[in-house]
Image 1 (cartoon, helix red, strand yellow):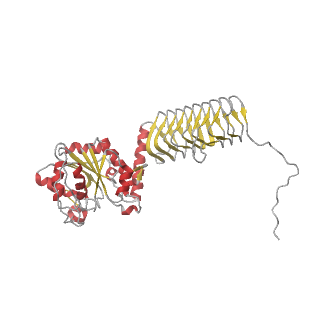
Image 2 (cartoon, rainbow, N blue to C red; image 1 turned 90 degrees about the vertical axis):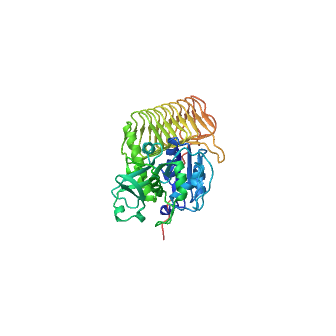
Length: 452
């Protein structure tokens, strides 16, 4: 199986300097979603056809398993797929501008996907590939109540005979509600025969990929169809409005899957997963929480409202938030409390420790049964380099304490409130660093002068 992903469109309606396929859905580029789906299929070759903003697209997503074909100028979907043919099959030179000929293996099928259609499910594509079997042209079609803007599937006696684009359709053809999604599977060798013969005598002056249907029918090749389970699987992104709509579809799908797995969500409409969220049993998540990268929540974890967790691991029975931020490299043990307005970055906090409010813990190794007071921070950055703070078991960190790394607080130590620790604190002792308290008798607070 070869996969060709068409990603050359300009995306004018996005009104952005960023290429359309690099706009983000659930924290990943639109094109990234499509590439990942192609990989899940186990595709032997994946070729991305790029154009507008092409080098930026290629730099953002290039990988050893991808090949790239540039479409310049953009002359339609048939022309776009033709650019990918040298990477998949021997393709004769055509009269279409910007094509070339190379030799490659021919015994394969080619799946055509679109870089701005991010939510097509793996099961749907497998169904399409199965429908294609050994040598049929398989089209992914859908029935829409409002088919406006889509190419229509034309059938005679139930069999597909051609696809007509809306701009070229007559009134009877526009009344058809079975539409072409553009996604198809074809024998690669047949594509190589058909694509160079396409013409552009149509309303848009483009080389339509859809014209291969009539060519397949003329050869006597079976043309079959498969259908997605949901219309949103084949919806593309052409505007920020459409992008936002698909984002909500995706997030609701994720929320549904979490709840089916036993996670309690206070409101499934108010969660954002921008990566992978792995949950144990009896996990509960309050509203407006964001999960980025890979986040793992152990059994019985509670995430309170308005928290952000990125590439973090939270042990069983721990409580996070509200208004907490766990940045990459955070690992919380069992029964750890990270409270409101606490930020943790690249730090491990062992079992039964607590930082309940207003603290910053960066580049720190924190032991068990540690209490971190309000306003405490690890000063991990000297302006050039970052250093680590080590806080051993059973330590009490007083409020408004600054620990200037590299520094170690020994087991069982207590740091008095307001301490600025610049040297190691010995175990089982009180360490205090603050100016002597002084009261000045007779001192008068300044008084604002009266205006004349």
